[in-house]
Image (cartoon, rainbow over all chains, first blue to last red; front, top):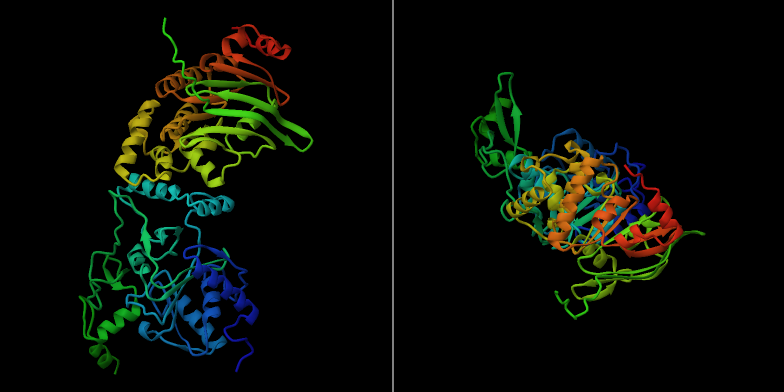
Length: 293
Length: 263
């Protein structure tokens, strides 16, 4: 077959990562240190997520990899190919069919189920990092639940921009205890973190941390009484599939300032078009097939 | 003649036999004193006399080797050295305040003035932006910083303003005990004078108890009710400020007082 151990990592490494994952699941939102390995890709490309995925995969799994919601971008394609080659697992682009989903910066639009694991790639796991540079101090702050500083960041946002301008990596509190960085997902996705039936695992390779949200964990986005959390998105419908409820990417289409908004979740957009929904600029899926022929 | 209440007030802070060693050398040795509510205690001495070490031990920044520091918490007197760390840290952001010599150590330089003042409020659970901002504005006014500077960062402030901002940031939660480490150090004399004036006003209005460490005898004469003189880690003389400064008993205090330049 190939010369790699199943899913690239050796069995002892996978055991070490699984132990970290178990601890992370036991203490939701707590950052568990683990001995992150060198992976055959640069830091920042998902080395943490890949290691967590490798430790979770079994031969029967069906893997989906998304990057900013898309199945067809470089990062998603290369990680998917990586596991096809080193683990030989089946892959899919359909959210509903996948058992393990590795994601960079999005949560799929389609609701997840209890049979799925969502693995996040995390660049900077410490939500307090830009406010307090000392690791010894931030650990102490987590241990003693001193999270006033997190609100200072939100206060600064309102003072400077009139509203909470943090639009991604929006800090959350897990089960009323740990403040957690949900990885750079748009804050539109934050409500989906809470009460999610799927197991959510977060891996940061360079920073050597794993944390987790077990299924049905309560996750609250931090805010002020008079400036409550708002899960915002672009105020448009998808130009291809017409969806009003999905997170949108803005695409510049010409040099005259022309633009279109499309679903960032490519699988969601495709399946909607196949179901016959059409947006402002979209052509029905059937017409596309005819044009191709 | 006013008759003072015969009820004896308990000391706010009671220190017994506080000792800190750095290896074989002494940081401070066998320091004992009581601080009563509303009292300002000055600690003077030359560089290396152990006054900053003493202050750090009192404020819980350094673990002393021996002694006890009993603080009258709202639940009764407690030895802060045997307290758990969460309790001590809670104390240091509610009932205590620490004004550093260098505002850069006490302020967050990347955060606006309003955020700096509001941090302690948010740390004790304030979650209403409007209320936090009103409180910050009120305190900026009290330390004579213009309201329109609330969204400026301390980097853009002068040294004196930074120091006043640090004081506002510390006093916003209504502490009962304030530690000050050379609060007027590094400021020019006219700015010093205004800061001292402000401090005197705040101390009197809020009834604060203060422990102030300085090498500037003029500062303690203006601010402190009582004075402790330290040399080589030990307290060599203590008493009422005027008494100590006007009639120094210990040879070192005499030297210290006579070393002040007369203009």
